[in-house]
Length: 196
Image (cartoon, rainbow, N blue to C red; front, side, top):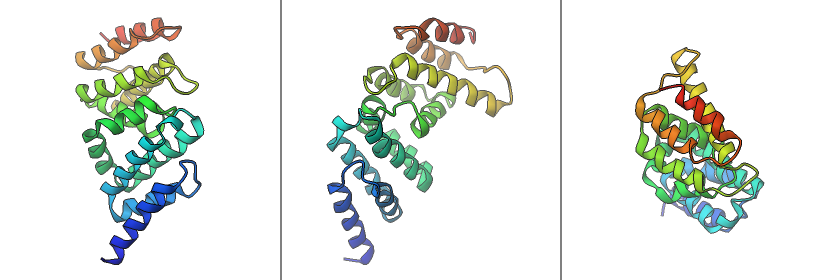
């Protein structure tokens, strides 16, 4: 066994027995990702699955989901996006079980899918967001953040003040805006309908 392989297995063991709120967790993931990115993603999924009940807690979710997402994205955004595209369980953990759903890196990833018209994958993620019952935000709050981010990101990239989304993008956002129960529904439905 090479020194690199030994380091990888030591890190796997260390992460496996770590508390999800451990202050050194991010550094361990960073080291593992630099040795073997795919294994780091697998361990991330493993840790969130093992502690799925703690993902509803804002602090634990920030440590387990948001911080690790950021670390892996910095190591290789391309590899992370590829891994997310191939792992339905990981998407469910991030968007359906985490209090940090629709924030930071995972929000940017979802927004990029919608803007790139990757409607099928965005729809899969939005289903998880709709089923998420964690944290201080409800579904309507999360959809407001998502729609605002899609509009703002589109306008910033295109150098315009009003977004111009295609029919599939608009219909996707409208479908999920219509599922909102509460004060954000009418506002968001109106904003999306104005794009048609």
